[in-house]
Amino acid sequence: MRRRSNMQPFNIEIFDPSFNLIQHYNSGGIEYKFDYLSTIENTILIEFNENVEKGDYIRLVNDSYEYFGYITAIQVNESIQGFSEIRFKPFISQFDEPILFDTTLQGSQTSLEQAIADIITGYWINNSDTSQNILGLEVEIISVTSSWGFHITSDQKGLNKAIINFMSSIIRRALTKYQVGLYVIPDFQAKKIKVQIGKKYSITYYIEADLPNVIEKSIIMNETTDDINKLVIYNQADLATNIIYYKHPDGSYDTNNTNRLVPVFYGITSVAVNEGDTFASVAKDAADKQFDVDSFNNLIELTVQNDDELVNPDRIAIGHAVNVISNGTSYNSILTGFERGIKTKLIFGSIRLDLTQILKKGGF
Image (cartoon, rainbow, N blue to C red; front, side, top):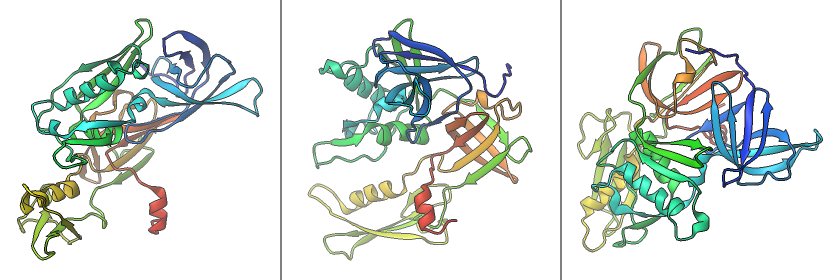
């Protein structure tokens, strides 16, 4: 297992969308953040080059790491003459766009991976508007996930179509609910960008979070005082008839008032029953939307040295399953983000904290 210094120099390469090299130079150690669940812009300082434009590809690589994205903004740095500040996002952010989604794909014979591949192909590979297509983009399915669904409902009854954000409604939830990720592999010599779609990692890593090599640790679980574990659903026709759903310790939910989560945090809603539907079926849809949660509904953050030999942060990639052990308790999660500079922070799980909301609630 190779071990490198904490802040290796990087080669910085900038290509136009046709894969022509525009600029190449060396940089000192950089800080880089990536969050699969929330798009993050990174910033780097480069020598000014008038040929570098918004939309160009940027690749940062050294012997240990490779980061690939596209430029979102260029600003001349006023404090250092002759340099520009480049802001860039990971390539996967190209898919942070609206799509028209066929809701019948959920639960059909079409796998989740195939559905994602077909959407990418339709919008960014074989689009009739050729200017929207990404040169060299191709997809590869690496696993099969059947019987999937995110409870996305039609915008208008009977049409089975919904306008959704591809990234937030499909791509991110595919990872946190089914461990199906998108993995981008650029090949500048072949002028291709391959997107692998599927469950890539089957090995579960075990991390002892209480050992002294873990510099900082934070573990936040899904059950808080804001979580609803009982939902009362009324029929809008009379606001008297109701069905009650209860959440159970294993994450399941149904109308059985046994082995349920307590103390009770309840919610009340009402639903309209249209012709051809039943109150029970509409109520079930409402319960699905309320209780359908991701498989790794937690937030675990562990900070270690880049060359730590116990956690070995280099070997854990986005989508990897982990079992974090702390205070005698084992927590299952997956890697969904990281921050790397002179140290590495590994970010696991599907929860992200909104600091503004925490402050409003008096969390600090």
